[in-house]
Image (cartoon, rainbow, N blue to C red):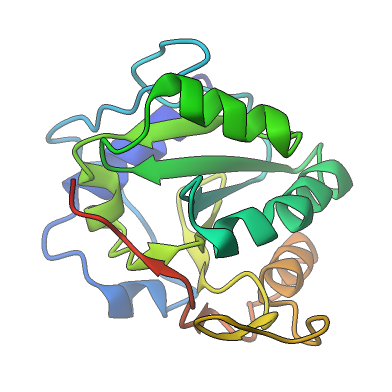
Length: 199
C-alpha cells in the first residue's frame, strides 16, 4: 500500500483517549479515522512525513543523539534492520527541537545507521505513543496494529547500569513470533533510558 506508514502515523494521531494500556493488548486493532496529520521532518530529505516501502513491520524507535543509552543500541538496531531487511523497517524518531540537522546527520554517520531518522519537533507522535524515554520501541505490523512496546532487550538494568550482554531479547522475540503468526508472548516491557525533553 502506497504511503502505508504515513497512514499509520495519521491513524495513531486520530485515536481518541489513546493510552498506554492499549499498547499492552497484542490484538488491538487500529482503524482508519484520520482527523489530523502529524508532521515529521527528515534532516536528510526534508520530507514532511514518513515515507517508506511496505515491509510487514515497522519498528519506531525514540532516540536522542546525546543519550548514551540510545548510542548503545545503534549496533543492535542496525543488526535488526540488516537481519530483517525484507520484512522490517526500523525508523528512528527524535522527539523535540533540540538537535540541529547537522547533529542528527553526524549521529547517523558516526554510528553507520542503516535506518532513517525523523524529527518529531512538536512531539505530537511521541505523546500519542505515550513515549517516556529514549530508547523506546513501538513495533507495528503492516495493518497498523501495535504488537510490542517498550524496551529493546534487558541489556539496561537501570539508569547507568548495563549487563555484560542481554539475555532477554524482547523486540527480536516479538518480531520472530509475529512473523510466525503467533501472539507476542510479552507485548510490553517498561523501557529504561533518558527521559524525553519537552522542547
